[in-house]
Length: 118
Image 1 (cartoon, rainbow, N blue to C red):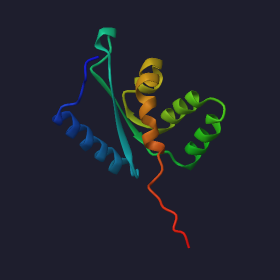
Image 2: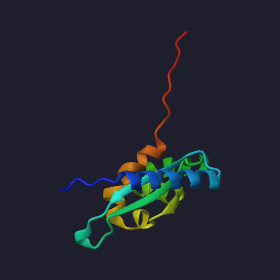
Image 3: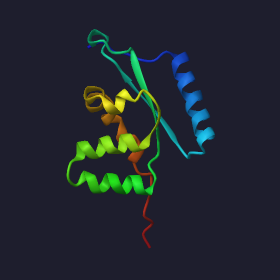
């Protein structure tokens, strides 16, 4: 399989746009997520979704749903956190399952923390 990557110009444009979205919507974090398409199947070169950090109700809904069906819970999280971009990443099974879903753990990862023993 061919290794794909963004150009430096594309990366800069994506980061700048994410910053503009973050400021414009007053969000704490925006996660730009890129998935490369399969052009032999008629897909675009790449797709991008700008995802927001889940709020408390969105995260709670995700945690409840993940007890029944983890894949459906991840898709619901993607729908809830999608801000802008290529909606196909959330809606099309192949792009979601084998592209976006693997990156979603980034938006639900915990902060670095430490317990201080007394």
